[in-house]
Length: 336
Ligand SMILES: NC(=O)c1ccc[n+]([C@@H]2O[C@H](COP(=O)([O-])OP(=O)(O)OC[C@H]3O[C@@H](n4cnc5c(N)ncnc54)[C@H](O)[C@@H]3O)[C@@H](O)[C@H]2O)c1
Picture (cartoon, rainbow, N blue to C red):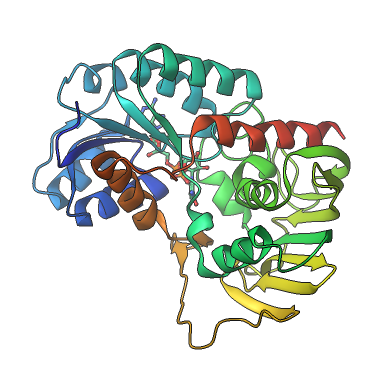
């Protein structure tokens, strides 16, 4: 039974864990009651910032608490599956960061653990809340673009070698998987949301400019269930700073380019009898990690919708059965 103020605990207090903590703290119907990280210094610093909130250096100890409603998992990719299953088995709902897991088999196990224990398994997909993304989704759902033909998706970003060096998991096959799991999974989720499951991929990848085990450049020709064909171009090798994060959709009755550096702008909108609504005001901001920038910072909207979903019996926050599609697509793209 969920109380009115949902009680959250955050596991993993790194770059994005801090953002989870901040947005939960700012959400009126949520309460942050514990944090957890194996790095005790991080725990201590954050505990001092947030009213001496109790902290744990082991998820096992955290999960012994019976008063937690939702556990947010913001640890390296390779830990998502095990931690989600453990949280489900201790009767807690879960909000796990993207990517849901590294492989689809693990996603299946996470879904089963949630079902078997009567808890919900949510996955962070905050880019769905970007204004340009939802405007395009509405146009597609209302068939304003007519038959959909093609899509071009570009993720042309910069990650310095230092970004990989300063972490013990980034750039590693066993813990990160690949750039598709990290930078590109948001984009793949949106492509599937727009065009249906990925059914075919033909791919080239390479590691051109970093000392890492995973790829830093890739290009893939894609085909979706709806018949849409397209290309995915991704790299973390762009000189100096992020250049573009974009999705261009070509349909029978219109063309839309969502662009900017992180899907934050409408760069082109030409849709028959369906102009871009006038006077809409939006300023989607990126998650800013100091030395590099990620995609949109709409984690506040994810937490708000989650709380709303529990308290008012609504739906809409992405759950495991939907998020697994991205992991299956990633597998297909790497094998293609
Ligand atoms: N939705 C988004 O836009 C977004 C943005 C950034 C990161 N992420 C995801 O969040 C996750 C974390 O990424 P990050 O950039 O914050 O990484 P990070 O390395 O900055 O932080 C990870 C934290 O997890 C902690 N940790 C590691 N093992 C642990 C364990 N066994 N128990 C408890 N804590 C443990 C580390 O000490 C570290 O503080 C990744 O899966 C990443 O893909 C999502």
